[in-house]
Structures are given as C-alpha cells and as structure tokens.
Amino acid sequence: ASAMFLGPRVALYRLVDELIVDDKPVQIPAKVQSLIFLNIPSYAAGSQPWGKPEARTMSEFSNSLVNDGCLEVMALVGLHHFVATRVGIPAVRLAQGRKIRFRIKVDTDHDGKRRAIKSVPMQADGEPWPQGNAEFEISLAAVLGVVCGDRHSHKMKNHAKFHFP
Image (cartoon, rainbow, N blue to C red; front, side, top):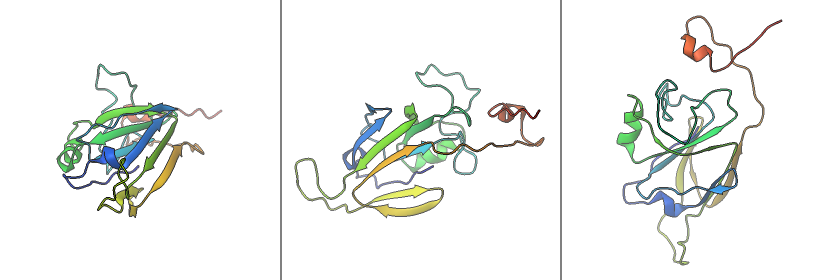
C-alpha cells in the first residue's frame, strides 16, 4: 500500500506521466493529490478506502477482497479526504486489475521546460522516501494464506476460505 500527499498547488496528474492498469490507460483527475495502490481491503490502521464490502454501489468495479487477485487503484483529493476514509467515505476509484504500471517524470514538463519539483513523496508499507524519475510495475507475486480467528467478524472470515482435510 502506498500514499503520500503533494502540496495543494502541485498537480499529480502532471507528475505521473502515465498510469496503465491491465494494458489500459487510466486518467488521473486534475484535483488528485495522492494515489493509493492496494491488494487488500484495509489500509492505514483499518480504513477501507475502496469502500466497505457490504456497501451497495452502482459501480463498474467489484468489491475489494483479500483473495480476488486484483489490485485496486484509488485517488485522494487531499488530506481531508484521507481523514474522511477513516469514517467510511471512500476514495475515488480509478481502476482495478492484475498489473499496474506508472511512470513518474518530475524534472521536466511535457513541453521540455525544467520544473522546480525534483521528487514525489512516496510510501510503501509505512516506509516513506522521495522519488525522482522512475517507472514502476506492480503485480501480485506470491500469495500467502491468511487465517482469521474467532475474534474477527464473520464477514471478514468470508474474504478467504480455507478447507483442511
């Protein structure tokens, strides 16, 4: 999982040169300040930015599940939106797929002019760093089983099913 924020005057869509999910280009809305890529429903100590599985939505996307084999791509428009995900307001759903590619281009603009921004703040599994020009590819590698004990709700247990002969 990753998410960090740029200042309000920085347009993220101008720094992410391309975002491709399952070989299809994805448009980043102009007001977006942060992207989140998840392979599990929860993030940041329990918030569910994709939305809760029981919430019925009219959406082209399916629910985010532990065992669905999909990666979810979401956007936040600011720190207030991040805080709102803690109380159940979902992030902006951008895409869902098995392979994500994106390119960050911070040192020059599309017209070749130099920019003042030299890096984009990034975070993966709680570890932040400043990222310069780079290309990323995110896909699922190894899949590990998860066991949910009795203290977890029945709905959470249904995310992954195990059978022991």
